[in-house]
Length: 262
Image 1 (cartoon, rainbow, N blue to C red):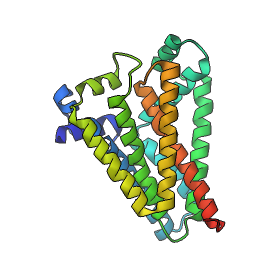
Image 2 (image 1 turned 90 degrees about the vertical axis):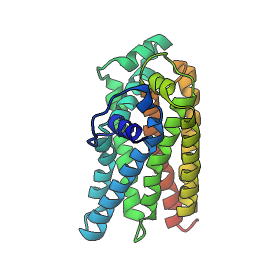
Image 3 (image 1 turned 60 degrees about the horizontal axis):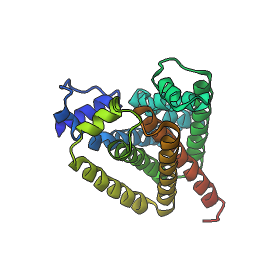
Image 4 (image 1 turned 135 degrees about the horizontal axis):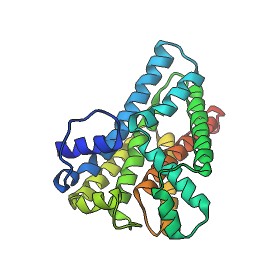
């Protein structure tokens, strides 16, 4: 189990980890620890908000910028890379095989840059608004932190359960190497995360859950229709889209709350 944890953090973060052998045994439960990377990201962001806002008095603008880039710095941009590759592939309007080839192309196209800039601007705007309006309570960013785990448990379940667009690649390897009990563990983690979201704050928790469900449904439909299944890039694309949608939904709920409508 410990080696599976090391493999998960070695694959999906830039956090230094001990060297281990990459084999099926160590891979069997690694996806179960994928959500824990999200817990670390959420914890770092929460700590930085407390330090920068409560102790040092930095502006919401500066804090919003910092917490927008932290997830990419911790993950090394592995999921954002998938988001950019999918943006290029979908914008090519080529046939399915050509789209799959574009996903593997290491070169960056114009559409990846355009969509990448739009994504970062939207994420930064949402984070700024959340920090600016959160007042004395930091429960909003407890929910955001749990959201990083939520997006990853959904992504992990998709890797282990959904149809693959290709028989090779990282997603296929993780799916084939995973122990059958890994799906059960991820499902239990999902239940725990859903309960935590509702218990911490009902309205924000429901907003995050709804955003996650909508994102996941669209992910499945789009992946099957456009690519014939999922790939590692598509799983990364989903994670980024899911997290952005969570921020957008939370901003909407926050503005309604501030306006006295909730």
